[in-house]
Image 1 (cartoon, rainbow, N blue to C red):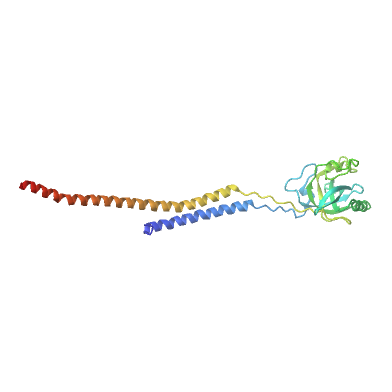
Image 2: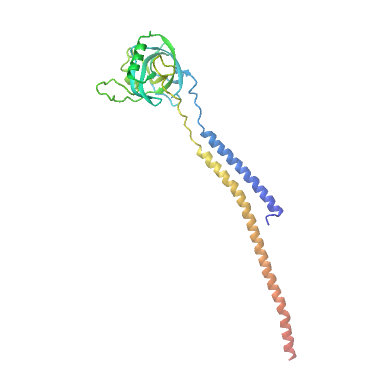
Amino acid sequence: MMLRPRWIGALIFALALAAGFAALGQWQLERAIESGKAVEAPTETVLPLAQVAQPGGPLTDKAVGQLVEFTGTVIAGDDQLLYDRLNDGKTGWWVVSHVNVDAGDGRTIALAVARGWAPSEGEAKAAVARLASEPEAPQRMVGRILPDEQPQVPDDKSNPTAMKSLGVGQLYNLWTGVDGMDVYNAYAVEQTPPAGLVKIDSPPPIQQTELNWLNVFYAAEWIIFAGFAIFLWYRLVRDAKQREDEERELEATAAAAADGGSAGGPVDGAGARAGKVE
């Protein structure tokens, strides 16, 4: 049955149709995978700070973790220590400086800059002393811009000014000469720490991915269509075979009935002749 030319031709057509559906399903699946890939944000390309962030407002999602460059003056004596800061799994201290950034349009904007990490309070204070002795002069700095953190109550109640989180508002209240000055609601982690400090571990942000489930659904639909094309061919062949089998059975039944009628005719005639003789 299946070897008849028309059904072989139908099978070839069904296979070609299934192959087309499968190709479309593969294309949809590739689209789903491609759209689910993380878009590589150019966080490691150093951009001007003014291009990435503006004072007085939060950072955009795209700006978080971006490497930026700026020219600023470190204000001596405004350095602060942050305790209980992890760096490569070790607890230590951050040194955070007040930097006045030249905005390039005659404005000066205050920015908190995490200069580096020290394993002990003594080493952190020694670094602060060295920074305080340096002359105030504009310098180019490169850092990773991050959103400021929520202030936390210090563990040591006897030292209310102790900080373990980098809250810009809290630092702003401790800085000098910032009344009426714009301030970035973010901080920068300096990429080249000053002498006596270790570079703060600040990796680029992890890119988020999201799979396009609509394309996955379409891909599954095309695969189902491909299977249905083969199934439809099978059903057509099976139905045709069943019809032929039923027709053969009917023909055989009719032939048997015809043969039975022909065999009984002569007997009746003989009986009739016998009766007439009597």
